[in-house]
Image (cartoon, rainbow, N blue to C red):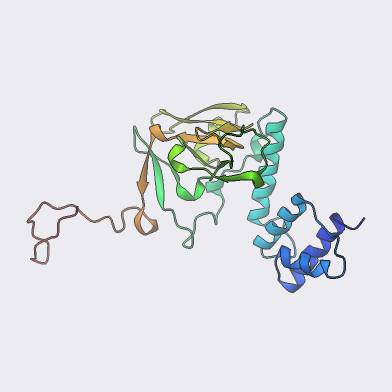
Length: 247
């Protein structure tokens, strides 16, 4: 009836030609066709199109590729299956996720051998129901969720990373993650989803246990910058002056 699907196509055209947002395009359209109402799924795709910069084509855009991957994983999990090995997207193999504009703020290291397992750009925020007394289910809509309190979480949820390849490509629906260096158990995964200790449901659930890893801050977006060197009280620095004690 020209309310949702065709309205979405016109909004995309307006976004591409006028360089406006999805909500602005819909407002323009409603000036002459007030009952236009793209469904929630279409609106999310229009917002994604806006994030891409409303290009001529989207097939090769990293944001679109990531969206396709998430849909594939959600569909596989709903069917009780792991995604095909050739469809798993290992985020650290795709350029552009970590940049000067979004540098890593901290890294996660294996508590046993100190091998780096992840950096902050690959971690996923998760949410829980607004009403803490309400039951939380895998089908709870994102729109009804609010940010989860970090202090209540005992897991770091993250994207698939290349060091997990040997385990994730086995086709198992769930399993555990081992440090690639010392083989210590550092986390677990469940393609169908996993519930955090804060009661939030995360799909897919790929997590590192906070008790098995150490979080190391990275000053200036790279290891070691701005950390300083601890000197004993009264020590003399290279310039002949007394060094300040790092507290």
